[in-house]
Structure formats: structure tokens, C-alpha cells
Length: 136
Image (cartoon, rainbow, N blue to C red; front, side, top):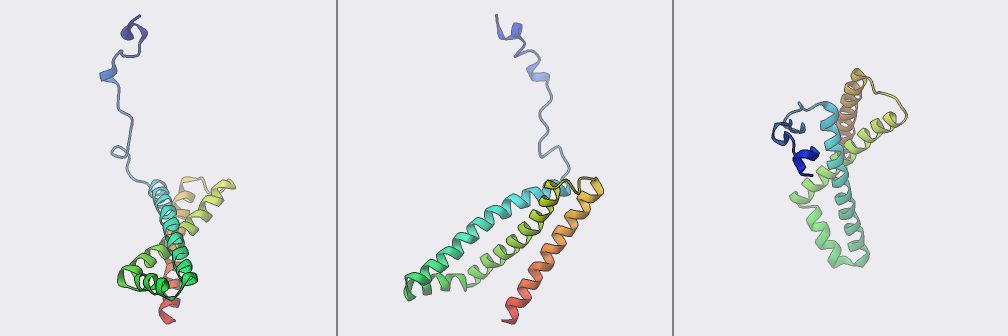
């Protein structure tokens, strides 16, 4: 039995392609889901940097001065700025996911509202952290 008789290759060129990112208009849930994954990776990298900072402090003054010099440079501040923003967003969106896991917030208007609340809360939390950090 050939492939065409079996049906596997019949009209292969006429089938529609699977919808992908080019087909769908970005929605708040898809964009926030992508950012949630990205911030999860960012949080892991940031946690490794903080661990390296603590380990260098335990090793001695020389290694600590090197790592601390990097983290207090403009590049280090940019990295820590991104890490703080990543933690704030991931926390607030994670709370939103916990509500979904409990069965709340699945209506379309609730999904949009909780998305806006999560982003706003993350922004306010980040702003608060920056103000406290700037004051010290």
C-alpha cells in the first residue's frame, strides 16, 4: 500500500498551516504569559548573581571587591534594576496565576482587569523599591 492509498500524503499541499504568532493578535494573557516566563528566567539569573555576591563576600575582600565593583557599576545597576523589576512582575503575575488555580478570574473582563492590576501593582511595587533604595 502506498502513502497516497493510505491517506497520509493526500492533499498535503492543500492543508492550512497551523496558526502561529503571525496569525494571532497579541492579547493581554499571551503577552503576560510570555513575560512571566521571561521574568522567571531573569529571576534565576538574578538569584545566581546574588549568590555569587554572597559567596565572594565569604571568600574574602579581594573577590568581594571585584564582584561588588561590577554590581555597583552602571552595568551592574542596570542588571539589578532589571532584576528588581523582574521580581516585582513575576510576584504579582504569580498571585494572579494562584487565583486562576483556585478557579477565580476566568471571565474575559476579569482576565483583562486582573492583568492590568498585576502590571500596575508590579509597577507600584518597583517604584516603591526604587524610592526606598534611593533614600538609603
